[in-house]
Length: 392
Image (cartoon, rainbow, N blue to C red; front, side, top):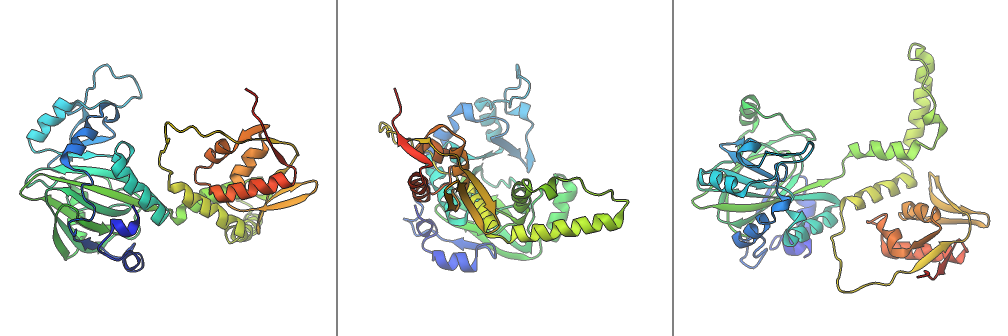
């Protein structure tokens, strides 16, 4: 599936330029768009994968309050540090009383949902998680709230009435604590109703991060899937910066005693200048690219019963990867080879005695295979690695 297929009949380019991260949008299904994403029969099959479901992956809500784990899980004979497994009979009994289910991270156990999640990860260079919400007639599982990520809600079965409000939190990253006071504050700060829509099977509702909303199940049981889309934020740069500057002695050195204010300010100014140079460098742009690529996880595809024969290489010449502001390079006694986003994989390769191409690529799952093959060819031409045969 491509994003244009997923969001049809709305134009994908118009969505990316005019709506993503900006404003909510309701897209009616044409009848053949997003057919059968998760029908009741398939959701029942997914819930039957009992080893996956525990107090963390399955939540039960009754009148906007989370059920205690002992009311829907088996809590006897639990080993320390383990999550309590769900008891299907207890869950079924609570649903009979009108409780709602939230099945978290369904993309991990349902390939159809996983395929959509992986597509959205590629499209938006983001981490994506898919949760399923099951509720019954007249139930409002959650009061007015906002999410910490962008949301694509896809109605799978039944109907649900969504109310979207004009207020929007400013790029939130921390969850609000539960409680009546917070719920009251959210209701008071949500603003006027922006629009109300009754979602039908196949409909999509897009909500940018922080958009206030709530939902109410209609006259029949409802099942919908939400895809939470979380691109990298500026906060992720701090960890990348730490890795980038750790090799530099100036950052590993002790700071001056803060009681010597003039000396401290001078050092901080020097470090700040260096940080600006690093964060605006071509090398750091590659770090950001790799980080965003890593958010989009590769789907599992074993392709059995096929068995690919590995290509084996040995390291025949001493070399190392050198980081400079203008980029990365493999440096050896005969010269150097410029590198791009493959540099973490090449660093790993140069520490090995023997390696296979598939094993090298697995160390950096997001690595572009074409780029990696090109750089391996350059290493081979320089005599740094040589293709070899693995002795059985």
